[in-house]
Structure formats: C-alpha cells, structure tokens
Image 1 (cartoon, rainbow, N blue to C red):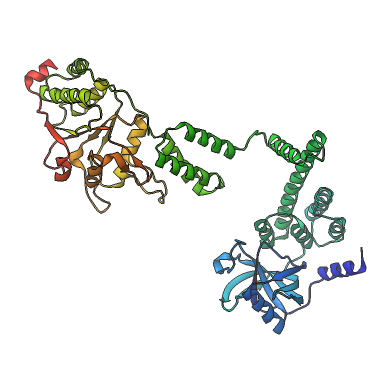
Image 2: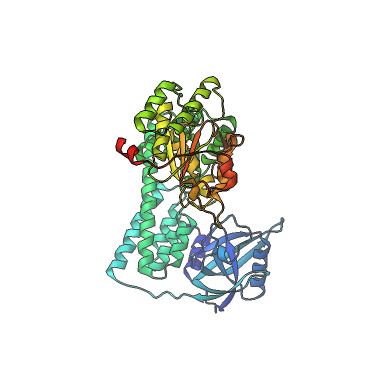
Amino acid sequence: MSEETKKNENQGHEELDLAIPQILPLLPLRNTVIFPQQIIPLQIGREKSLKVIEDALSKNKLIAVVAQKDASVDDPKVDDLYRWATIVHVTKVFKMPDGTQSVIVQGLKRARILDFIQTEPFMKVAVQAMKEEPIEGIDVEAMVVNLRGLFQKAVELAPYLTSEHTVLVMNTEDPGHLADIIAWNLNIPTEEKQEILELVDLRKRLERVTFLLTKELQILELGSKIQSEVQGEISKSQREYYLREQLKAIKRELGEDEDERTTEIKELRKRLEKAKLPEEARKVAQKELDRLSKIPPAAAEYTVSRTYLDWILDLPWSVSTEDNLDINRAKQVLDEDHYNLEKVKKRILEYLAVRQLKADMKGPILCFVGPPGVGKTSLGKSIARAMGRKFVRISLGGVHDEAEIRGHRRTYIGALPGRIIQGLKKAGSNNPVFMLDEIDKVGQDFRGDPSSALLEVLDPEQNSTFSDHYLEVAFDLSKVMFIATGNIAETIQPALRDRMEIIEIPGYTAEDKLNI
C-alpha cells in the first residue's frame, strides 16, 4: 500500500476537531449516503448545491449532507429528504470547465435534522450531532470477528471489493466505525445504507450490518455458482447463448422455469387473440396489455390494469345463444310454468312470431306490473327457457346511485362495471333475457338518477352503443331482451315508462289459487 493511501486512511480514522454549529447549510445527494470518517468526492452541478458549497467555503467549511428519497427529483423539497444527515467537512474544491465542481468531503458525525430553517436560495437546517459512546462486551467482540470473516469472503467473490478494503477492515478497531466502513463499501440500495446511518445504537448497527453483509454474501455465492454452471456448458465465444443459459440457471435456482409476470402476459395475449372482440374493444385491450407489460407487478396500478383486462376479455362480445322460435313449444313451456295469464302469454307468442318473420327486429321492452306474488319474475324465467336463452335478474329496489347502472370510473379504488355489464358477464352471452326487477322502486338523490341511466339501456336506438364508465368501450345491448317488473306503473319515471310496453298482471282469484 502506498504512503499516500496510508495517510488518507489515517485521516479517515481521525475525526476533525471542529466546533459544530447547530445550524448548517444542507446539501441533498442522489443515491449517496455518507458515513462519519468517510472521505468521498462529490460532483456538484445543481445551482442550489453550488451555493451551499460557496457558503461553506466562506465560513467554517462545515455542511450537512442528506440522501434524497427519490434520486430522480431535480429540485428536492423538504418532504423529499430523509431526516438523518451526516455533518461533513469540505476539504477540497475543484472547479470544472463546464461550471460544475468536484468536491472532496470528510464525514464527521451523524446528525438528526430537527428543523428546516430556510429553503431558499438553499436549505439550512437545525441539527443535533450524535455522539457515540464506546461499547464493550463479549457479544460485541464476537460480532466484530464475525463481520471481518464475512467481509473477507465477500472480497473474494465481489468484483467491486479489493484487498485494500480487507486491510482497512482488519485494521479498524472501533466497532461502530467498522460497521460504517462495511456499510459504505457494500453494493446495497441507498435505503438500506440510510437505515444504517440512522442506527445510533452500536449493537443494533452491528446486527443490521451483519444481516446485510450475510445477504450480500449469499447473493454473491449464488451468482458464482450460476456462473460456474454456465461456463461449464458453453464456450466463451457464444455470448448470446451464454446469456440465455445464465438466465435459465437463475430460474432453475429460483425453482421456476418462467417468470410469473411473463407467463401472465403471454396468457393474456392468447386470450386476446382468441376473443372475438369488436375492433374498438380490441384496440383498447391491446393498448392496455402493452401498458401492463411495462408496469412492475408490485405497483398498485398493475392490479387495476389486470382487473380491467380480465373484464374486457371475459365479456361475451360475440357469444350468442341460438333462439328457439317454435311457437308451439313456447306455448307449452308457458302453460307448464303458469296458470292462466292468457293476455301475457299471447303477447309473448306474438313477439316470437314476429321474430320468425324478421330476425333482426329490435325487441320491445316488456314491463310486467302487478301485485307481489303473481309470478312476474318467474314469467321472465319461463320466457328465457322457452326461447333457449340465458336468464339474468337484477333487483333495482332501493338503488340510488347512477354508478350501479353505468359503473364507476377506473380512477376510483375498487371500481367495477355497472350491474348491466356484470349481468352480461354472468350470463355468458350477449342476448340473454335480462330482468330489471322492481323498476318502480328506483331512488334518486345527490349521487345521481339511476332512472335516467336506464333510459339509454332501454332505448333500442341507443343501446347498441351502451358505454359503461368502467369499460369506456361501447357494448351492444340491442340483442338483449329486457323485461322489467314493478308493482305500480305510476311511480316509474314518465320518460322511462314511455320506452316500455306495460302489461298488467292481476292478482289471483280464489279459483286460480285452487287450480295452481
């Protein structure tokens, strides 16, 4: 080791005997945590940072340095900074031709930031310097010996550690300083280095550094093992093949042949190819899938995007059941399920007869009105059975929120499509018999008017492009046969009532009840 290197190390071991004021200029750092007694060069280029150095040089050359929580923030505010800093001494400053400065600083003490005194033209903070009390004990000695042994192993495996680091660690007697030296030399995230800086308790600091060093050593050993396996299988000249084999070896060690996220994206792409979506829906799903592939699985946005794709791909955009328009069979089914109700049965048979003549006819919206228990809901099931369609029922009694019909926008947490889209997904076809039960009991308040939202659903001229707030893609409801039920026709909103054909079902007489 050179004489100059030894001299620098000795300087690093000796704290400068400087009186530390309570208020200091603050220098935010990106991806860097400085520890006491550490000597490190810094590249200074931000305008506020240059003013901090200028202020320090004009006074006692002391500043506080603190790590940013997010390195991408160019002009950090108070909330962007950690609350523990390091008091450093500016030893040398070199001005570069491009206007930036290269500054060499030496760490002195840990410090807690008590308050931010000023933020312009640069930050000044009130700090409390932390004094470390020496500790002794067999447990401390054991941790020190263990740390040195682990660090020696890490030096043998890590390309970024050299034998000079080993000499420095072996010649450091102070346990707290030893922990700091290892922490600043390890290739670990800024957050973990900041955690070590904030540990004033020396025993806890030694324990935490031991944990991080053990973790880093395990990663290095695993990487070395994978490297050996790969190098034994392929030649050095096949670089591309080498990288692929290395990736396979990593996945074998993890016990998985393929990354879950990659598998999930592939499955979604296959589902998108198989799903016969309309052009507009296909473009939206493709765009969302491309976006999903770039989002980290841990992000909250990933779940939101994945749920949205599941809804689009699960909807029966082009799945229809074939109608059974046999009038005789329909009459037989209706007679089996219900006694009397001749007027209602006749109207249903008329509808089926017209469908035989005009297959693309836009169906009427039937509304069964009558007292409870006369068979309005079960009549809808019979119609679905007679036509060979799926049956879906939703109850609108007491519904006050328009979002129950149209869905919530995706910006809301826990957003879902409205009941119409949910019912179609449950049915699994785009032409079910859809019963809107208790339509006369729909409420209205500050959250919206569900009756107004139903106007679009029940209008044959509009419902071919029904837009749910959650999907924001037009869905064709024109093939759906809507049937509404209610007890009193007068309480139904007039505009909504005009869109429906009211069929009154009287209560059963004593004779009807006897026959039933």
